[in-house]
Image 1: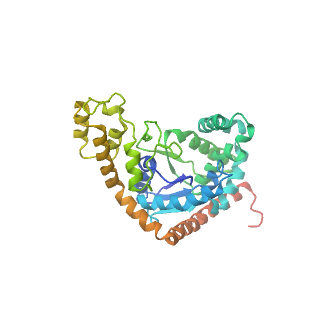
Image 2: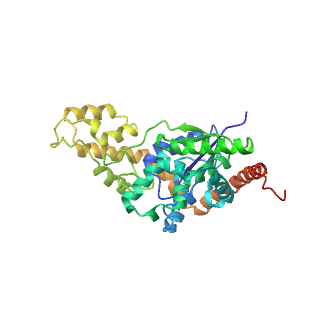
Image 3: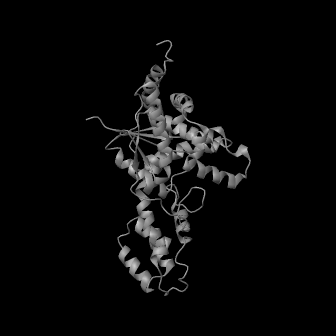
Length: 336
């Protein structure tokens, strides 16, 4: 029985952190055994709001591929490819742009939220929102349909973008005949991971993340600065582990001493410093296999480059076939 195709993408704007690991990349490793898996390094989309910093995007591509390989993505099972090397995606984006109104793009809840964030950052200047940024849901639809993705791993906040893709597919198929596959969401089993500061979201730019590439001293410092129960003043004060980020991470990495940690925290027998030190030890143990794989790939950059190159070649062949079918249906295959 033919495997279903999964398409997922990530923008190269920095290293992966443990929020990415628990919320996404860990699942990708599991899915690569069950599905025909494509993982896109979305460098073109990264440029929609990093167009003035191409060096950042370029450097992050290599870092991101190493992160993916370090957590267990197997290039013999999953195809890792670079978006900018697949011109067929850009061509499909142009065709699909005729199927979506500007008003519909502006109504997209995910886009609205991100536009609001940009305006808060840059003010009400119109130039802060580019054509490329507003249209990135169309580009995402091209990413997914180029590989006839059946399933797309997404969180709840990304569902509006996937629905936009589904609308484009339905409209294209209704006009030109059934050609494209309408994708379905593959919802992540774990919710968004909180930051060390207690923020509901761990973010690259929020200063509240443990990155997979962090060295031991960096991990130690970040954990020692993590937010605990603000009502625990003295070492023997009783505390509430449910509002403590240190306990949150003990639970996240499944510390085998979790029950003891909880009881001692509630009874006042455990100080925050001691609890943080234990978390440092457990976190480094958890990250050790990833760190060892990372070191190997960092010492073999040509191997990383070859994996991305070969993956991109394979992906291009698939996208070429889809584009050919699309052009046939649109009657613009003049010389075939």
